[in-house]
Image 1 (cartoon, one colour):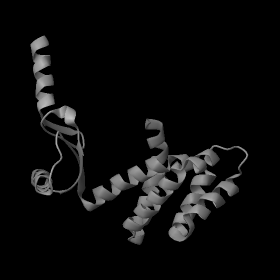
Image 2 (cartoon, one colour):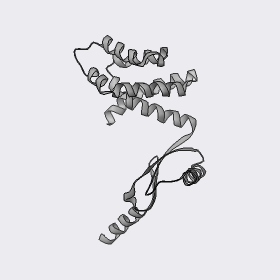
Image 3 (spheres, helix red, strand yellow):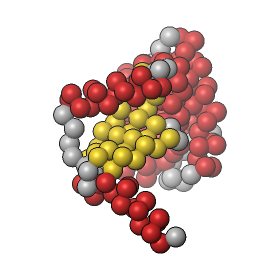
Image 4 (cartoon, helix red, strand yellow):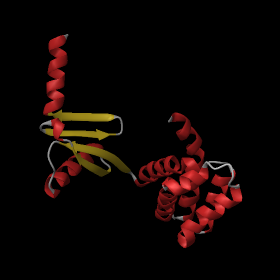
Length: 178
């Protein structure tokens, strides 16, 4: 995994710099999302690893599938990726690009896992509290995990707030065995 990120980072940073210079962060985000979908399609993925397919044929295939949804810079980006045999790392490039974009926009990514589905008001209150705590805008992904029994678990960056019944039971079990 670390190797993929290491390979993808310079491409993500280059795309981000170009997008920022052009004032087109959202456009690049859309283009990279499209590229990710295309390269993850099983038929295209087989072609990426096919030694019988030349770089030019692979480039034509990907650009043909993407069509007019890629601008000139996006098409050039695909050419560079194909030429350097890096089309397979597009998902990692996109993830790194999105991280850079969120950082530029001052947005923190939070993962909220709840034992039960949260309604809009509960979600809003949680996000508002996180924004107050971190003094930044928070983009939250919410999921449900019934195994938590009750409460919520919030992950922001490398910080974890575990206010779940399952987390408390696990902590008690550790305390009792030591």
